Length: 157
Image 1: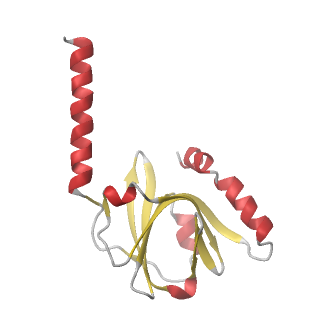
Image 2: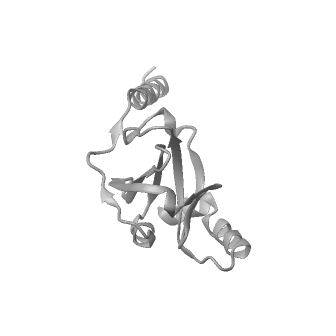
């Protein structure tokens, strides 16, 4: 699953471009990701804020994280926590970074071990589980209703 997602997000191309532009900064890990940034800490949950999430390649180097155009030098990260989960038969992680200015970045990606091993700072476990916002619940119920209506009309009407 991860290989397909990496292909769809263009991880190989983004990594080659970065290496060409920054030949003295080796890429330690690269993954397809979704990321959100907020002015204050937010709960780790599925919800509407992920609709507008930045999607692209997460690159880890010795000096920084690069996330689809965002650059986060390691020296501005004051706290790092990770929430691990399984989704669609694949291991995933939500990396939550608290920054010096009080803002927070949440990065979701699959196959987390290479990324987490490449980070030069300690990453503590996230206390809690991946929640579901009311918006996300409503969206899932709406999808189930739509599928039910389609099946009823197609096979029973």
